[in-house]
Image 1 (cartoon, rainbow over the protein chains, first blue to last red):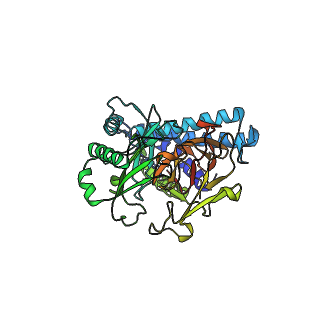
Image 2: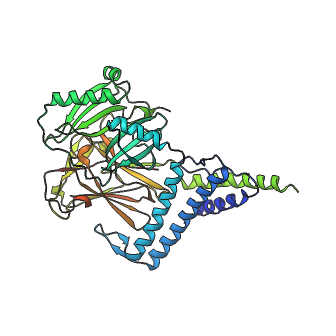
Image 3: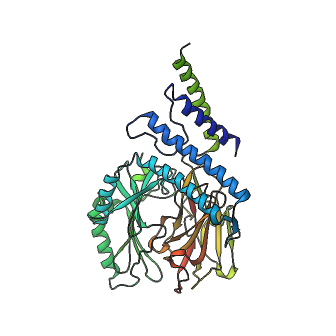
Length: 265
Length: 183
């Protein structure tokens, strides 16, 4: 454990203890908002203290199991936990991940996210579960997204600040099957793509004028991507904002992205 | 002596020290992006199994700042059935003391594999295998690992992922391009 990490662990504990007689500020360094549901600093600290405690316990357990537990060599030649050691470490790791997810959910409007997802999927009965938050991978702004998953395996990213869905597509470990052949021509597929985007993307009609359009397909025609991209990459960025829908040859929506809001604020 | 006032001063000093130490351990809003072919990338397997497309992928001319030495993407064709032949890893630049999410860039030219075989090594000696549908994405970031503490390495093979283990289909391309770790 690095010296800075030890200091952080000790100080977090001391801050929690001193809050018994005085208000204590929330620790910095956490990437997620820390406000408790009732706005009470005491409630917020207990969640964060629990996360810190779980992290410390995970570090200690991991060190113990590495020293004396079950490890084996995996298919890549690296040492990995096995047997009971794997079960114990995985259990505590999942507990830490769940505690962080609980903290992140406190500031998340899951009901509103569900409404947005139902609009963009045009499925009024779509049910999703909250998975966590992350800095978005598209822009250098680091603007955070909230992540959801439905029963079929689609993953959804929401920009809560802009109140919109910014991406959805097959999530990790999904087995959603898409058609690999179809009778639709490229023009027909483009027509479907535009009609869909006009229905679900606010301002798409105007965007089509200013953004640059391109269509891409693979050698085998396994997917058709219809993309409208901003003509200029914002300063400090690598990617231009874009709106895109990827269709299967049969016209199924495989993935969707509207990254425009991720570059703002 | 006013105990509350003293405790408040003590807490303020401690909080300042806490901010300093946490900045040193760099756990907030970190991002690491690693290219195929970069310092943090290692590929394995028969050389004949590797293919390359120049000026394609995440790093291309005009998409800067991206050194010209990285203006290409790698790909392979998938192995039919069980096992794998060609594979690669991306080592993260630092181990962050917070669960992170990893993303893979899927370009518009290749990456048709519906069951790509990724694996994320985290928390010293834990490993999670993840199947990703590269074929559904086109010049987009696709999620690989989620909420994994101390994410250390991302692996990708030319075999079928766990969800399609030992699948007999062939002819798919697997793209090896940028990997990004976000907190």
